[in-house]
Image (cartoon, rainbow, N blue to C red; front, side, top):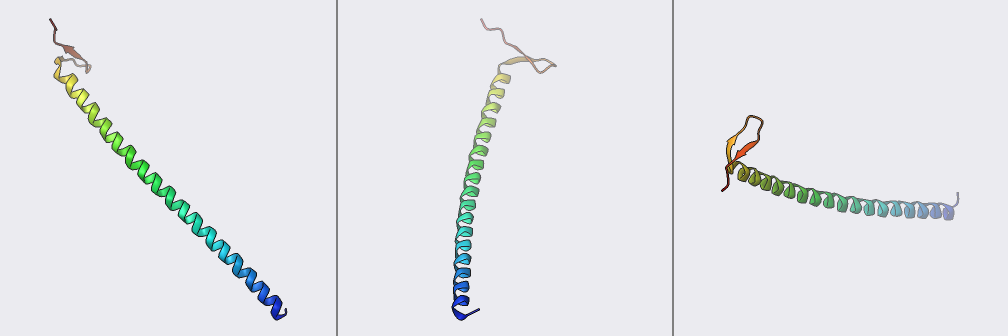
Length: 82
C-alpha cells in the first residue's frame, strides 16, 4: 500500500467516524427530547389524576352529606324533600 492509498484510506475512515459520531449525537438529542416529552406528559397526567381524585372525593363527600341513612349495601336513603 502506497502512502497515497494509506492517506485516502485514513481520510475515508475519519470521514466515516465523523459521520457516525454526528449521527450518534443526533440520535442522542432525539432521545433526550423524547424523554423530556414523556416526563412532561407524565407530570401533566399525574396532575390531572390528582385533580380528578380531589373532585371525586368532593362529590362523594357531598353525596354522603345529603345521606340520612347509610344502608348496608353502600347506598343511601336521602332525606325527604318537601
